[in-house]
Image (cartoon, rainbow, N blue to C red; front, side, top):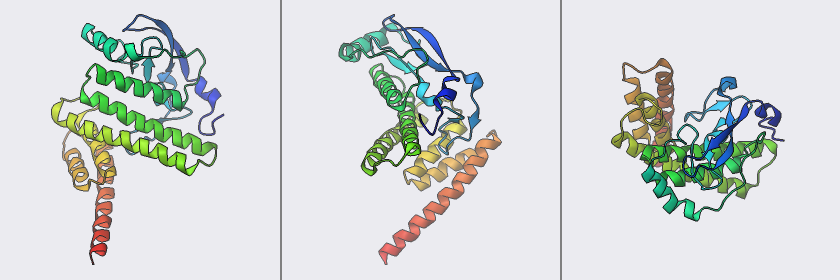
Length: 260
């Protein structure tokens, strides 16, 4: 049993829903979260959600075990005829059926990551907006982070295994940053359910974590200067801006020291 999350407590926050696949009409069971029972904790700086007794991200994707169609639970039914054809050509014909989830099952990180990666393949196949593809990449990176936390809570994690996982997390994080940056230019708000200021704050964090300090400061400025920004996001942006300025100063001092 995980030290990070108690399985019995996690099960109390889940329910089973009967699904008819929008793509192939196969009937299967999906495990969902009882959102009304969730108790929110402080999110990570990059808005990764956290809740008591559960990582709700693990249950965010619905995946058909028959045809391979996977998408976020809220968007699973949004599929037109052209997209079905694209799925058939690019996904279903290559998909090997999987064991379906069953009632009472806890979704582990390995299973969740498989479903999110399948959802990303499907999103690319049916040419969903770049923002949706990028957000799936961000969620995958969050899940890997959660998996590392869980493994470390259970005991010492092999250094090579941890490095490999962190490299994969970084890869998807970078893909998310690149895609969301493009979406900010190409798409209208809301993007991925976020208003403009929340989205720019997220981009500020992503810029900061890619050591692009000037860009991070620019995004923070766009947030705090908006008269309609919520106090919560404004405070987050101001704190982040101070953090970025400190990191920028330190990087400049180190660069000067090497140049002497």
